[in-house]
Image (cartoon, rainbow, N blue to C red; front, side, top):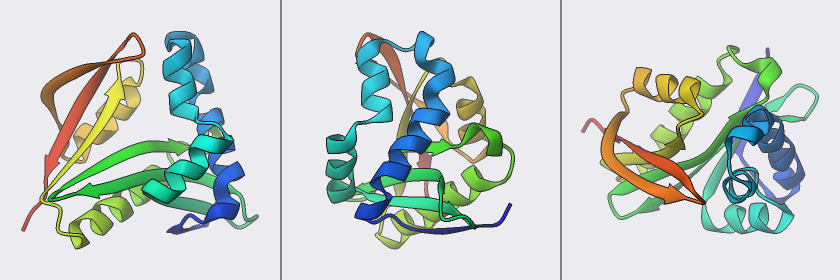
Length: 157
């Protein structure tokens, strides 16, 4: 599939919401209500995220958001959040390109370490992150009644 990656803008908000919702729908019954809502966002929270984080989107030839990832910088640490690809496009290389784009952005901002958090139902995502050099940090938090597992990756100099 042909797609382009670019930073998200305000007009992408609805597409980001649709992508997140479609990507996480299969996990709805394995998430608590609060965790699911915090993951798929709402119109007001996606707009807040657009202001607080850098979001990249994968856009199809039809100008539709088919993938997304958000990241932010805090000193020398970068953090990833909200990665999603439309289920029908899993395996098309979109997730890989989004991750690489976010890592390049964070590295360019001087980050020496990148973290992300994921939940136990997302086994496929955990394998993907591990293939890309992320390891469990040992930090586990409560996420609306679910275990939130932190992964980290040390960036090469």
